[in-house]
Image 1 (cartoon, rainbow, N blue to C red):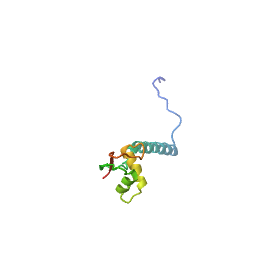
Image 2 (image 1 turned 90 degrees about the vertical axis):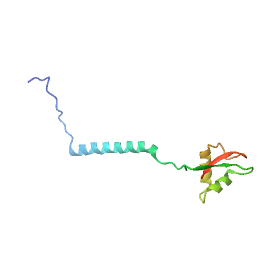
Image 3 (image 1 turned 120 degrees about the vertical axis):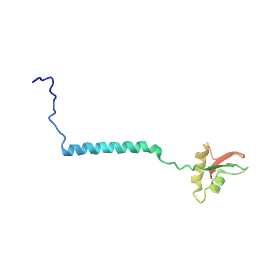
Length: 102
């Protein structure tokens, strides 16, 4: 026999428990990757439909948030309006346009 053409067969084999461990590790890794990749496709809280409101003299963000909050927490609506309009502060100027949920 020619020794250069023989393939070496390892002296070890995976047991049933070993195959189960490899399967569970592979399955767990697959699920973890799926969760990480699917994280970007989760729907956001932002409302799609908005309308523009022009700030009146003396009007505050609290008043506007209170008008559009529809019974929800006004503080949460204020935070949403700040995020929606990329405001640096809650101080508004007369004539300023704000996007509010419709």
